Image (tube, rainbow, N blue to C red):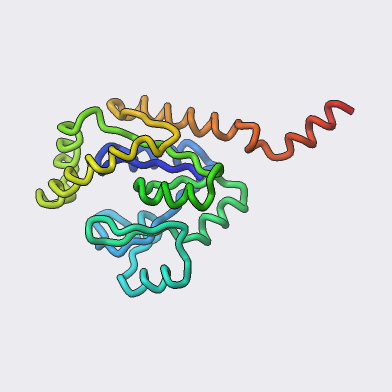
Length: 199
């Protein structure tokens, strides 16, 4: 389970898209949310858009690996698709905040790799949010206020990167993924292979 987190506007969604395009054995965990759909988004691809009642039912049914209340809306990771991908041999990419990363780590521990992406500066972060032009100035101000709190959780991550160049940051994330896949603990069948070598 490969987690990317960052303050809103620091580039994690762009890097996630590039990673998915470059890595065929990586699947995306699609979160459920109660927030309204934005122009260009597609239900089931970007998010599973549900109403508050549906979301509450999913919480009651223990259908989420993790969930949180963010900016007045609820976001959660449905369990079943994640377990299905893992069982089929795919790694799973999560685009979630620090709360979700923490909950996921409590459930799955060593199977979770956490990467936090920082903006080069808070001024640049505001510029990116304004250039994105998807939110009102009130929402942008709220996101900026929340960003400082999010950044304060950087030390709960295995890797911390500064995204001042999206290509370089993407390559670093891809390198981390490759290295984590090569860890001895993740190489299934290694013990049998070694025993075969030593016969």
